[in-house]
Length: 421
Image (tube, rainbow, N blue to C red; front, side, top):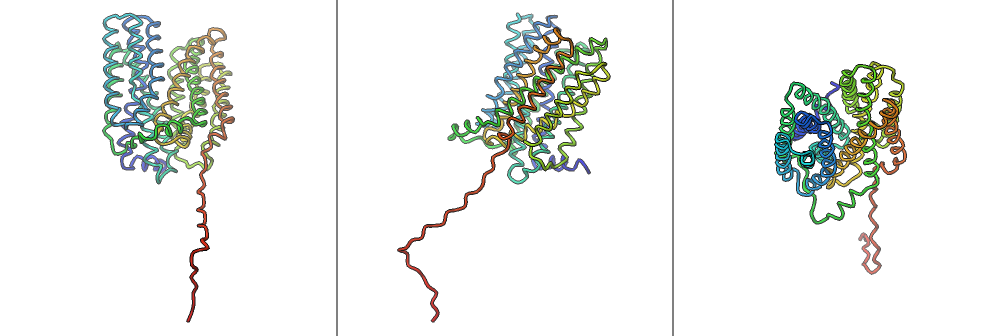
């Protein structure tokens, strides 16, 4: 059966116990940002206030995520998750109360920042557990595991925002926020309860060594790549919306983005089924180059139907690309800081997406939807150039065992001779 790789992977003792809760929590995380926009706008009637809360949420999450991951690496996931989840739930409850009470925009933005600061980094923690589980004896299965992580993330951002939008359209924006935080907390608590698969806390006696292992040239390249892919996502969503509105079909934006995600689910699933002979570093320029070519085609779209077909091509390159990022990160940094490394990549992507949302709006106002697509093409081209420029850094260092030196001959030692009598 072609899915045997994934089935065998999830049958590994402890694997399903952390992957499924993390996937559940991921859906909540994918819902949270958009649910806050619907919540604030439904009560205030102001997109300005909703945008300020959303921006404060995104910035706080990007800044706090690596710090939360650092604590998880240092003290263990099972100790850090429960208080972080409690703080996240209380922050959401406080924001709902502020919105209901008609608080000023600055207080709403502060509430959004508190919500973002407590978002549990379940994806980074799940990826770290895969590395801990498979690295000793089954490292060849890590690409499949990271492809599964990429599929989980893609599915979460396909299901989560659609659920929030449906609830908000039905007149229940508070329900969207409640469902989002409930899924995040439930998934996080179940993940914390799966102690058997959790990586051991980093040794407290070597903080300097572990911090140095995080400051690796390859990680900086990967952060730059994730920043660029964040720009790609942020600009693509705004540009697709502007394009279909210009062509008088505003309802086509959601289906176009949905089919793009579905094509990514297919290619990500296929990518994880195969054992690739080329190294991840060698695969990366090919994947980023394919994304660049597909993105350039967006500039030639003449109708929403053509745009939909081209979005299928761009979406197909994303999950394999994200799986490659995870593989390269796992091979580049010390296991004791792996959760932090994964979180830094997520923060870079979030920062790029937030910045692109504003810049693409300016480009679209000045040049039309193709101005926004030009920004996506620029981001994809930057990814290709970065992957080529950092090719040497991204190759994992090869460690050759040093042969033992022969013991020095001691001339004073008596020599034994085999004498036959």
